[in-house]
Length: 409
Image (tube, rainbow, N blue to C red):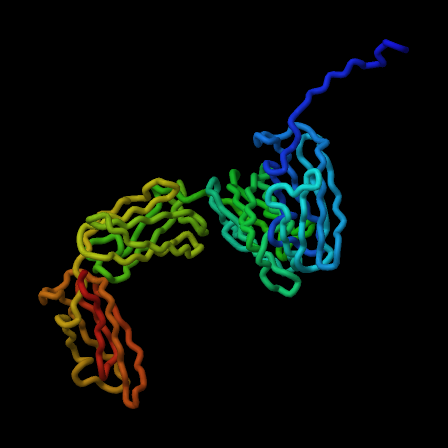
């Protein structure tokens, strides 16, 4: 067979630059700050040449060692023959571990890695919350699930890496889920229901359901911006400056019917005459209604915008005039409840709010506090009714009266 090729000879091979220790990268949960005790974890080596380009095949001389509190930990290193290598190990002891990744006996960039093996999360103690596991999520609207990993004693886990899995199945099949490990023991799973009807949300730790999983979640028609209603003093003229006010959002569907669940994403923006912003807080009552509170920082023309999925609702934007708030020194109170009240008989008196110039206010909304103290310092309950015309009626006779208002900006 001298001078004759054997079968398949000649062979063509391509020479490449070898992996470079300073350019090679290492990723994966096995080098993060907290790894669950007694559970397999892994790291991935991404071989790169001196120019930082990925190496296209295997055979580079990588070695991975792990040392725990009680000595060496077995490591299984797999060459994927595509320039990546997967090292798997199981921390069998709690405490600090050192992970070394070497190329030809030299540390790659950032090696060695120092990780801590901590108690693993427990499926029966891990907590799940968020709108994505409550029935009545709006169809076609992004929602989410919050997960707090806890150990067997119920203590919150403070690092990530637990094997949390979240799946969502709708009436027409699986729904895409984006699971985010916040690396602090919490996880957020985002999904968007694309079909009306019942969805099954499963939250697992490894292959086991966490407590209360799976969740049955109804996807219902989303609220319709054009049919939704907004009511309350916070979208009317006469809002007092520097006094908290409110309004209510009544979510309606495309047919104008009341939405019976929360979860719609309403956004509220309150802007003053010179671009001043008033922080608005939207509280979801989880029954299709939302209470919005804000405090206008000064007087003048304000704009209140209420949006749903970037669409203005109902009559939004609302143009309102914020007025000067009532002045306690100019405000008066009169009525029989302040003169000769009769024991055990309801009485009343009227408070007339005025501005700093002594002018009667034409609107309600000022913050009025009535404090009634009986003999011996005993407090007496009272009822305050805002007449929304600058007058306030209070019942039950007082022995003292305190009116609190704020100054103009």
